[in-house]
Image 1 (cartoon, rainbow, N blue to C red):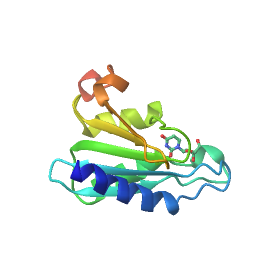
Image 2: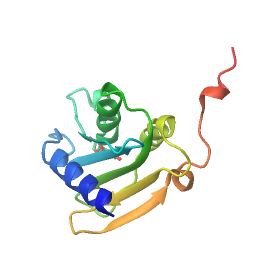
Image 3: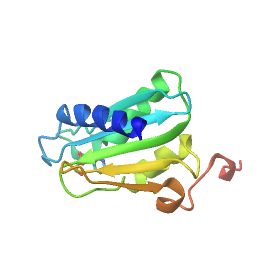
Image 4: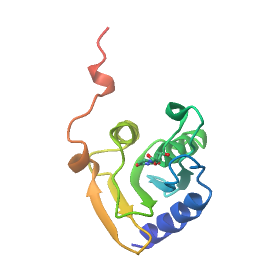
Length: 132
Ligand code: THU
């Protein structure tokens, strides 16, 4: 629980810095690694809309840049009711998570829902699927 509060704090702070002038939908994320390190991210939109990146992608990139590779938990926060990571981000989380990886979704009213990666993405494309 203590870690979840820390994740919430980091994700909330990152959300405040989100660059979302087009959607006006600010999202913050924080990942917890197997070594108990926390990395945050926010969505970064672009005038060329498809260039925009999700909050989860930013947090995962920060984790990798610091040399961490295993996600045990991730928390995302947005201002509507608890949102779930998009399919693209679930695939990014799966690259560095396990089926037990917890995905917490928080809103600004203090509600938090928790799922496992297995629940949200029971089947995904894996390194072992690449046969060439
Ligand atoms: N967004 C995220 O950052 N994470 C999600 O899980 C869902 C959507 C962002 C992308 C875009 O900047 C804005 O929310 C609206 O889709």
